[in-house]
Length: 573
Ligand SMILES: Nc1ncnc2c1ncn2[C@@H]1O[C@H](COP(=O)(O)OP(=O)(O)OP(=O)(O)O)[C@@H](O)[C@H]1O
Ligand SMILES: [Mg+2]
Image (cartoon, rainbow, N blue to C red; front, side, top):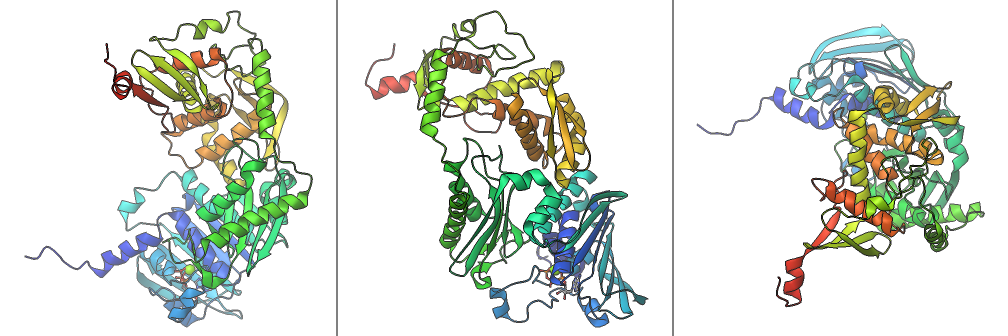
C-alpha cells in the first residue's frame, strides 16, 4: 500500500487556514484590514473572552453586493489585485484573497454588508459550509461576526492563552494600526468593558495624544524628511531622554505596521550618540516608499516587508532623525568622556556609601534603610575559593585569577546574575522591602499597558510595586522596592510592564526579577572600585553555576592554568 495519500479537502483547508489564522488577534487584524481597505471612517471592534468566543468588526466602508459577499469566501477571491503585475505594487492591506476563507473555515461566521440604500445581505457560514443567505436592512458598511474560533480545530484551541493575554495582543495591534490611520475612528470593547473610543482626528500627534496622553507628546520631537521618492516622518524621543527598553518603537511602511530590522537598526544607530547610556528611543516612525520597491508578500501575517534597496531605507531613516535633531537645535551631544571622568573622580573620593540591601557595596543609595555599621571591606576582603581580583579592563570586565586559571568576567552580566539570585531569595522568603513615593509618581498608560497591569497586579505587589488608578489613563506609583532610586523607579516600572506583557504566566515572576536585576545591575562602562570588584567576584563564585546570566548571556571566560602553561611552554606543578 502506498504510504502517501492526498489529504481530504476539509483537512487541507484547515491547514491552510491555520497559516493565516493563528489566534483571535489574527481575526481582528484581518477584519480590520479589510475595513480599512474598504475606506471605512469608523471601525468598531467588540470582543468576548479575549476574542475566543466572539470577534465582531463593524465598519462604514464601501460594503459589498450580494454577489461579492458570496464570492468573498472563496479562496483566492479578492477585489484588490487582478493580474500578476499588481503584485509588484500593492497599496492595500490585503491582496491574497485568503483571510475571509480562512476565518470561515475555522469558526461560525456571519457577514452583513450593504453598499448603501436599503439593500443588504446576510451570509451565515459554519466551518466552511454556507448555512444561510438572507436579505436584511443595513446602512452602508460591513459587519463580520466570528464566533467560537477553532470550534472544529481542537489542536489550535489548546494553544490559546488566557483571555487577557489574547485580548492584549489584539489591543496592542489595534493601538498601533490606529496610530497609522488617525483619520479613522476606532472603538474597542471587551464584554461590557470599554477599552477605547478614539474619534477620528487630523494628525498623528492628535491620535498619539488620544492613545498615550500628553506626557508622550511632550517628550517627543517631530521628524519629517524626504529624499528620492521616499519620506520618513513621525515622532521620536527628544534627546537625551529615552526609555530603558525598546518596547515603544513602532514602524510603519506605507502605513502598514511592521517589524523591520532595517528601520530599527537605523533608528537605534541614529540615537545611540544622543541618548544616555542604556536608553533607547521611543518612536512612531512612518516610511512612505514607492509601492514597487516594497515587497509585502514575504510573511504569512504580513508583519514584515522586504525592501528592494534596504541601504536607501537605512539612510533615509538615519537622516530623518539627524535632521530632526538639528532642527531641535538645543540638543547637545552627550559628553560621554566627560561624564565618565566625573564618575571616576567620584569613585576615587568616595567614602563607603550606605551598603545595599544585602551589604552590596554597589552603593545604590536607599533612603529607607539606615547605613549598616560594618565596613564594605568585610565583603570583599576574602574572595571565596581563593580568587584574586587583578583589575578592571575597559571599565567593562573584571579580570580575576585563582589557582585554576584566569577569569575575564563581564561586570554587568555577573552583577545581574548575583542580583537575580538575591531577588529570588527575597521573593521566596519574605516580602520585598519597599518605600513610599513621597510625591506619587504619575504616568499615563496605553490601553494594552493597562491590561498588562491588571493581569499582573498581584505579581507587581509581591515584588514591591503598588500602583493605583488616578483617573482616566493616569496611574500613580505609590510604593516601590527600596532598592530603586527615586528618580529611576517610574522608568523601571514601565519597562517591567513592557517586558512582562508577552510572557507566559509561569515564567513571569522570573522574568520580572531578571529585568529588575538587569536594570539595577552595574552597567558596562562604569568604573568599579576594588572593593566592589572583590565583592562581586566573591558573590558570583558562591553561586552553584556562573556560566550564564538570567537572560542567557555568558558571564565569564576562563583561561585554564594548564592552557596558560602549555601556551608558554612551562611545566605545570
Ligand atoms: N469589510 C469589508 N468591506 C468591503 N469589502 C470587503 C470587506 N471585507 C472583505 N471584503 C471583500 O472581500 C474580499 C475578500 O476579503 P479577504 O480578506 O478574504 O481577502 P483580501 O483582503 O482581498 O486579501 P487578504 O487575504 O490578503 O486579506 C476583499 O478583496 C474585498 O473585496
Ligand atoms: Mg483581507
